[in-house]
Image (tube, rainbow, N blue to C red; front, side, top):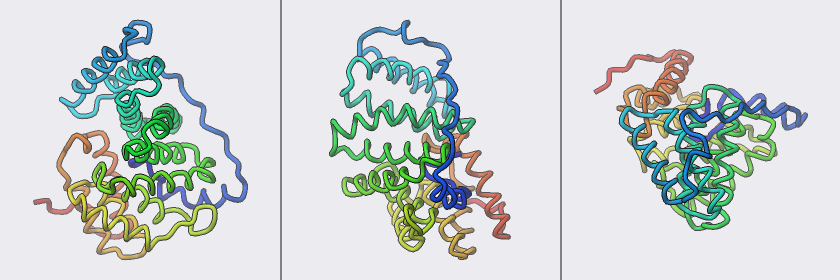
Length: 282
């Protein structure tokens, strides 16, 4: 599973091999089969399509993430984009929905599909609204989802993620719980130091420490900082931040689906460090 558009730590060795071979076939993308609506049943009116999408997403929030409602919203947003390719609200909401679905995808091919769909929104958004941090941030996150699902794309994808993150950082490092710092920091801390990836564990850790300082209540900042500390064999520091992931309360961005996945990963990481995986939460 991808975490806010980032690379898995487990893929680093594979990246090294891919940098030499350049091999790998894209995953077979499953068809997009919306749950309850078809494009032809929706109006040819952008404001109405946006209203439909927002209503579906609001229904999902009442019980956390709801895959079916997100997919319905995406059908409407895809149609709205076809009618008005430069509509800022359509492009932004479409990118957000694709990222949300991709991060919670049930398979690699499904994740790849969501990333590809989302990148259509962010590419248009970056061209039309270059000073809006959201499009650069979501572009980086979706590229990360794509690389995670199709590792051969890392050869060119990593540099694109880095460039989008730097643009987002220049605009607003605090956006989405210090998201630009989190993505770039995790990227630098996890990929190989050799070309074309050019990772840097020290710089990556510093960026993640800044992310935690700016947004201390967002669990993923602690998760990726813990990973960086663990990689640098600072196990006690890593455990403290992993424990914050396990103790994090539910929020809109920390719904039961994503929280359960991260808790499982965190507990596994803590056991590998021979640290307690059952902290006493306040």
